[in-house]
Amino acid sequence: MKFIKLIGLLLFAAAMQGCYYDNEEDLYPESTECDTSDVTYTATIAPLMEANCNSCHSSVSPNAGVITDNYTDLKVIADNGQLWGVVNHESGYSPMPKNQPKLPDCELSKIRKWLDDGAPDN
Ligand code: HEC
Image (cartoon, rainbow, N blue to C red; front, side, top):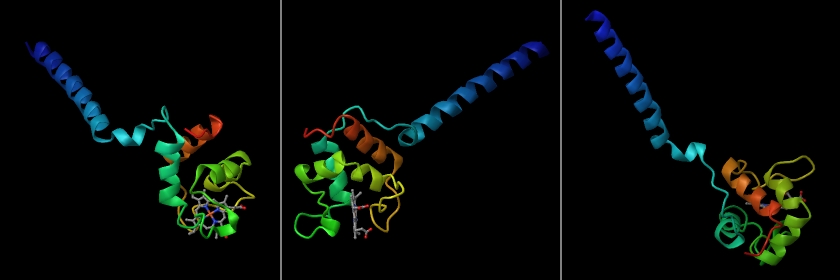
């Protein structure tokens, strides 16, 4: 009889353990997931530039002559490696966004994905 109770207790403990891990995944879905499956210029990259870059790199008064607020001009720094160099804080490039922390990993992954796709106008 005691043995049966012990088995029961162990099974209960195992079941609780399962619940604990399930709950943790439900609570923090963002921390483990970065969806780069449908990255596009229009839906992903343009809003990222708007939020982090266009304030200093607009067509009207661009810092360093670098313009990030339209596809044609962004394509120039996408193709010559400057875009990745600055956001990834690579040596030889001025780190961007200027005087601000590096963009979150997921946003960098999305930029990388777009560049790997050939920086398309989509
Ligand atoms: C607060 C203003 C500001 C923001 C925000 C900003 N930049 Fe800059 N950016 C500058 C200035 C000023 C320079 C000139 C170089 C320097 O002072 O570091 C520059 C230079 C650059 C250059 C040329 C760098 C080089 O090494 O030659 C690129 C490319 C660039 N920025 C891209 C971006 C991108 C992409 C973002 C957004 C992720 C961004 N910048 C956000 C101010 C800014």
